Image (cartoon, rainbow, N blue to C red):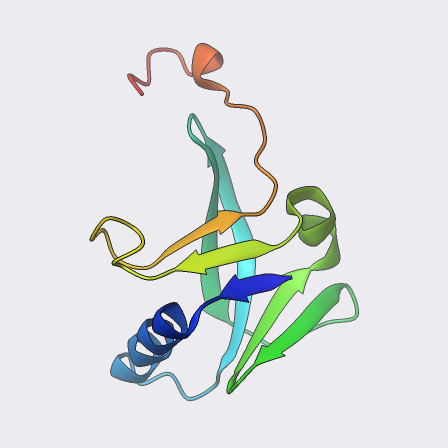
Length: 107
């Protein structure tokens, strides 16, 4: 359930290598939900029985099964695809915005 093209993959791998990451076991996790929707984080971690694992070339993407059920997977885009704002990640299924309840988030 991870969608990543070759350009984004190479940029992602270069990011891991430049940070001297020794393991390519990358966990995708929900950080928080903001006015513009969910914000995800990545970190290096091993899979558990509650996870779904997908290997793409050399990188193992690990995601909790409940996140995949809710968001349908993840699309990782290159900096170029992200309007020059660096690598990006978005869910396949988007949820409705909470902007009306942010208390003036201004977004």
